[in-house]
Structures are given as structure tokens and as C-alpha cells.
Image (tube, rainbow, N blue to C red; front, side):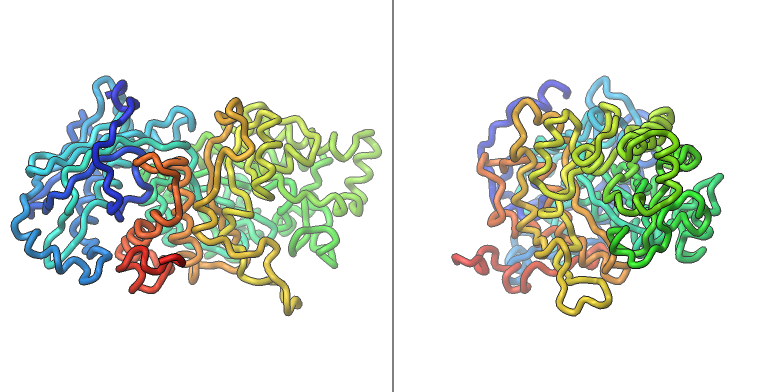
Length: 559
């Protein structure tokens, strides 16, 4: 398949009423013939010794086709299709195959390959005459992406699972390999079941990266072998921590759904929770007023100028790295408060005795900790300040997450670092909920206003990036900082908004017909995606009244 999978795909009839496909494939043809799934419908993997997670993915798809029972979002919810369905031909089988010469690896193994090496492309064909449908790919990960698309083509009415758009022919691949969601589990704790449900929703949107902001000043819930005392004293409780078994469960669950888990242990800032077990390593611990020495309470940062602290941190990160098979590992690096260290006598004594400046000591800390991660086979990931605000030496392989402003990506690219977009002015899911500090009656969130799905959908990954720098853009993610979120509102805060960026970074700038990606044509499909999430137990928030969802376009401002 290799050659033709990337060839130019000529569209003979692109039909804009494929409401269910999210993200929309980059190339497709559809018809207007009805097909229904036979009661005996089966999916066969024509793959030698198919990996168990591919077999499991097939079983999940069959299960979804039987249990989603999702009626079309039209007036009457598909009742007008009834007679057409009765006379429709039956599709009895779907065959999955790898292109000749493709290696047979598990989906989980494919999902954690170096990001430039991952193969997610696939082709999908559904004939209109009832003969076997097919998905072909260069990897099991690509087969999984194809299965996800296949699931979204079908609707339910009166006991029948059907489509009105056969034949279907799709050639698809992501515009960017990094399509992610970040979840902060430190400020508020999220049980494994909530994380798994989030991973299921991510997989439906073909997202590839779960950025797990696991620790922060408020709590340290990761139980790290050799450093178990940090979570024992730094987690909210023993019931609000993630054991090695929990971590393995999350990583395995994600991998089977084509998702790589990038863990973040933020350093040297945002580390007050370590005070409870290792006060010797923390400067300005619980200082008051906290606002003078920290971005939010409680105050506390690693004494990075101390060689003992640097070695402690390097050893802790090395131990944590063994729990996560991903090639990526984030050490954070945001919001390092200089006033904290200016007021810390131990830090000042070390700087004076060694003759180092603040930046020299910080650079030494970064080289020690990131060097340990690279020795462990990891690619370091940092927030943008380490590149744009500090004079530290970083590996050329370092990936930089842009968060403060979308305007900062160009400056990172100018320094020749790879970029993951996560700017607060487009992708922060927590913005617009009001101030969370207890004594601020009229305050707003720092990143107001609320970031709607429409706003994030308009993001341009290559804005202010030169053509020569475009290869540095790995993709992007939406982020949920959880000062005001916990399991009770996780689904409604994240979904379906987070899916908007999934299409930005999968489909790219243009739709299959060559027109620019646009909010107007996206809404009906995002409604469809949201209702599918609801059918699968994800409490995604409504985008509009149901009246509007059933009448695409009639609730547009210019309708």
C-alpha cells in the first residue's frame, strides 16, 4: 500500500452531509446508497498472529455498532429512513489488512514509537453492493484509526444499524502526529475510572497524546518506587494516589486505544507538596503571603542551586521514567518564582559560595535532571519559559510546549526547538469560570474569556511560522487545569470542546473538498460526535438546543 496511500486522491463527489465523521478524513468519496449491517456482521483481521489489543479493538467496534443505538440528528431522528432501510442491501463483513511488508506490532507498541515514526494512515472502502468492506494500513495503529472512522458512519433506527452514504472510500492520515489533551490530577484528584473514560473519548477523536500533569504544589499523587514517601505524605490521602499498578493500568489502557501517555512532574517550581516528605529540598515552603513568592498557594519550590536537591530530583525523575514507556517525559519548568529564591537564605548562600548566578545554577539543575532523563532514553519536554525567559542549556531534542500566548510560538521556532501548541488564548479549557481565590468577589479567571470550541477550531498551527520552520510543529493540545474541576464536571468541561483541536491537528487547514476548515460546516458533525459520546457514557455538554442540532444551519446567526 505504501505508495498509493500518500498519492493524490481525486474527489468525484464530496458529500457535505457526512455528519458523523470527526475528525473529518482528509480525503473521501461517498455515495447515496443505503446499506445496513447484517445480524451476522463480522470483522476479520487478515493479519498474521494479530496482537491481542487489535482483537480487543475489533471486539469494541462490534460492541459499539450494536450498543450505540444512535439515531440520526434529523427531524424525526431517522423515521423517514425506515422504508429505505427495509430494502437496503446488507453488509456482512469488514476485513482488516496490513500492507505487504508491514511489521506486525501491537497497537500499544505502535502508539509509543518516536513521534516521527508513528504510522496512523489508513484506507477504508465500503462498497454499495453489500460485498465486503475493507480497511488497509501500514500498522495496527492505522487499522485502529480506520475502525474508529468506520464506527462513525453508522446510525440506528427501529432495530437496524445503517448508513445512507455507500459507497464510501476514504484515504486518511493525520496532518500532525501530536494531538493531545492535558489533565491536571494534582489540584483535584481523578480516579482511574475517570481517566479511562477520558481516554475512550480521546480515542474516538483520534487523539494521540495524553499529557498527564500528575503533580504540583497542591498534591503529589504518583507513588514512585524508591520514593514512596513523597506520595505517602504529599497526596491528599492514600485513596487519592496512583500506585504503580494504577499507572500501568492507565498506560496500558491508553496504549490499546492508540494513545501515548506523556507524564509531567513539574520542576523546579510547583513542588510544594514535596515539603511534607523532604523539607530540606524546598525553598519558601508555605510562605505567607503566598502571592509574593508563588503563582498560587501553597508556596514552595525546589532548591535547584543545591547539588543534593538536583541529584534527588534526577533520581526521582529516573525512577518515575521507568513507569512510563513513552519516549516523552516532561519536567515542566513554568512559573519559576525568582522572589522565592531571593528570600531563601540557603539558596543565596549556595550561589555566593559557588560564585554562580541564578541562571547558571538553574541551567546546571536542568542539565542534571534532563541529562538523567536522556540517559533513561527519554526526550525532555518543557514549558516555554525555559526557552524564552531563562538562559539555560537544553538538549536540541527538547520539545517545548507553548502556553502563555499563541504569539510565542514563533520565538520558540526561531530557537529551532520542536513545538507543541497549547496556548491559553485558544486551548485552555478552564478559562472563563471566574476567580477561584476565596476573597476576590468580582474577580475573573486570569485567562478570560471562556474558550469556546469555535475559538479553538480557528487555530492556525503555522501562524507566524515560516515554511522552513513548519517541520518543528509537532501538533497541539487542549489543557484542563483543575482548580475548579473534579470528577463531577470533568466530562462537561472537556467534551466536546477538546475534540475541536483534534480535528485542527488531524485534518489540517483544508476540508476534503479543498475549502478552508470552518466553524459553519463543522458544527453539525461536532453535534454528532457529542451525541455519540453521550451514548457511550461521557457526559459531554450540549452545544445548542436539540431543535438546532436536528436542523443544521437554522440556528446560525445569519440563517
